[in-house]
Amino acid sequence: MPDWSTVKASKKDGYEVPPLEGSGFGVRLRFVSDDIDDVLDVFRRHTEPILQIFYAARGLMVVEGMQRFRQRPQALVELSRVFGSEVENYRQTLTTPRFFHHSVDEILILSNAPPCNHPPPPKPARSGGRLALQFPAQVNWHTDQSYRRPPPDITLLLGLELPPRGQGQTLFADCSAAYAALDRALQKRLRGLHGIHAPSWVGRSRAAVERGDTPLELLPHQLPQPHPLVRRHPGTGEPALFICEEKQMDYVDGPVAGLEPGPDGQGAAMIRELLAFATRPEFVYVHEWRPGDLVIGDNRNLLHCATWYDASAYTRLMWRTTVMGNPGEEYSGEVKSWIPRDGSAIMAGMENA
Ligand SMILES: [Fe+2]
Image (cartoon, rainbow, N blue to C red; front, side):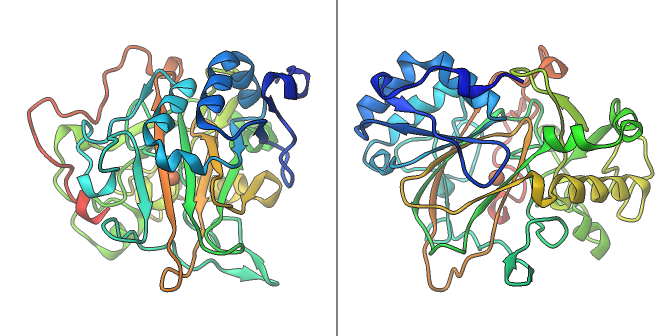
């Protein structure tokens, strides 16, 4: 693992990389100028060192003061291209239009306000007045769109309207550190196993199976997808756990291929154990949002989780872009599993997602 502090960055380059407090991973990126053109110029001129810093910080970067992107949404897409060769176009991937920006198809809107009307995450359990971090007290841990092959590489989140401090945080868990801390016998057992990931709204989640829901009939491009439980990061070579919350794995045929399926099977027990281990407080960073924060997280080796906020009192508005193009050897040469080849329209059940 390279040491990001050795990558030269100083005010004369237009940016600095002070440490990110409160965790063993992640870094801040601070610009001398908050002018969007200056920020883009620094990213373009220093792409390589900034990516080195990002990977060495295990894929978590916090950039402050980026609220000016609200007036320049296309510029957020340009910045996203620094992190991957392709930025997802949500219109092309058949996302319901009210969930993405009215003029920039690459920006997904996450908000409790109309027209999105996303409900807030469930209220977190608290112990001793502190926010619960660890699964299963905290239940929303996931990586974005893991029901696709190849899955996306990196997610960029821009906080624009936010509830007060202490609500609506985003948690990140370092799954490469978690994997390294597992005992050798379990590491060996996990290598070669695949988790099966499925959209939360197709009736294959743990809760849906426990309720006895009938799973939706899925078109070929909507089917659950397997991923290695341990992925090797293409940028750093580091192995990391790749798992998801119980909503986003398949409890009909999985959640672990080849192990006893279903909510009470061996596979379910393994996923619960791994989720609880990876989200232990020593592996978790809690991001308390301030307007204009741009938080960049690597889905290949981090889990993340949004926490509860009082949606009756506050609006939360985030913009999200997702970049892809470097998922690692496992996915070499694959076509995108989620693109329909038969002219079919919207994702089944997407209105309820
Ligand atoms: Fe997410």
